Image (tube, rainbow, N blue to C red; front, top):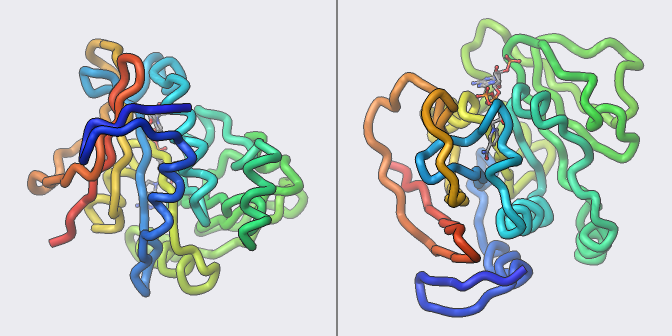
Length: 249
Ligand SMILES: NC(=O)c1ccc[n+]([C@@H]2O[C@H](COP(=O)([O-])OP(=O)(O)OC[C@H]3O[C@@H](n4cnc5c(N)ncnc54)[C@H](OP(=O)(O)O)[C@@H]3O)[C@@H](O)[C@H]2O)c1
């Protein structure tokens, strides 16, 4: 899939060129380098009738798969996993072969974080024998409830948000350098307020949805406005694809 890059300088680029442009990201010592990826309507909503699929397009899907191919691990909130019925992380045999040829695992780790311990075990991901899941939860799933390989990491239900410690574990124990975060807005809010995100990939879909649908970040408002720096802007058909850096104070 080809895009017109509008910024920093005009060029025609392919999704695979963009993958090469990502590999220079550097992970801090205590957590992975973390990239969020969302699609939003032109009026700033990330779902219609509870799901995001109608906002997506071939350019958005190419970026989505390119980011998954690049990532060491993928994180999504438990509601997103359930609503979007997550399955295995990389379905394309070619993409799996490219990762193996580069000395990586065939697929990124799938990360699941829950404060409540209510895990959507019925989604296809947990029935996938080749999936490797790292589950952060106060309670372990019943044995035999999943065909996937699960590494269970017990979290302390009284210790507040387990996110920072979970990301430290991913970095230190699982050697995750690049973490792709795929939503939704509730987990997005936690990651942002805890200063754990480095970039935002945002597809601006040429659609208007009207009120009532969630936006990128769940309420309440962030304690202060968060400025972003534009790293690139791509264009394809009527959609815009922005890549922002999230500066840390
Ligand atoms: N357009 C897009 O790009 C896009 C992307 C993703 C999702 N979406 C949409 O977003 C919606 C789902 O988003 P959502 O906001 O309802 O849910 P979500 O962010 O996917 O998941 C929320 C859950 O994540 C866990 N969580 C969040 N913060 C946590 C923390 N600090 N520590 C531990 N666990 C934490 C909690 O799980 P427990 O309750 O188990 O504790 C929480 O209930 C769907 O409509 C989906 O279609 C859109």
